[in-house]
Length: 146
Image 1 (cartoon, one colour):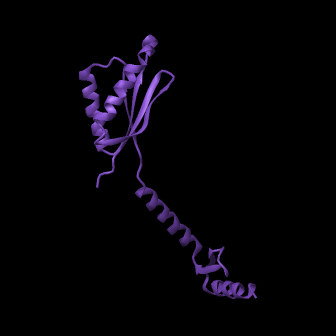
Image 2 (spheres, rainbow, N blue to C red):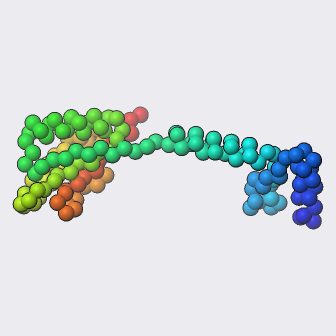
Image 3 (cartoon, rainbow, N blue to C red):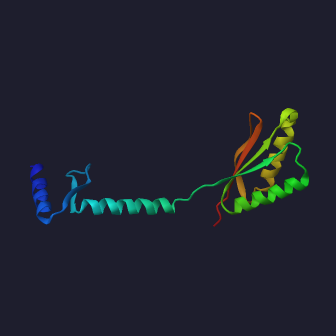
């Protein structure tokens, strides 16, 4: 009984010079449509491409500090960080410890926490400062503007 409607549909598709395309195979009975399969694939690719273009691309901008970064340099880099967050990019701020400067881990953490507190109106901290090798890294994501 199941096979009969499929044979009728297939013969109808052959008459019209088109293809019988199974739209929903899990449905009972399976849903089929008579159409040009190449055109169907083309439209599906077009739809997928449009969805991909609409998807937002997340960019990550980096700002590098040293453990003994001066106030002027800090303010300069903070302005860049503000610009990045306003543009909608994620911010990766890190303190790079060279040589023996690793003994100033607390200075690096204080610097990153200060940056986070001064940028809290523009973004929220995604990852608190974490030491990985010679780098102490912190991520800040932009806040959604309405």
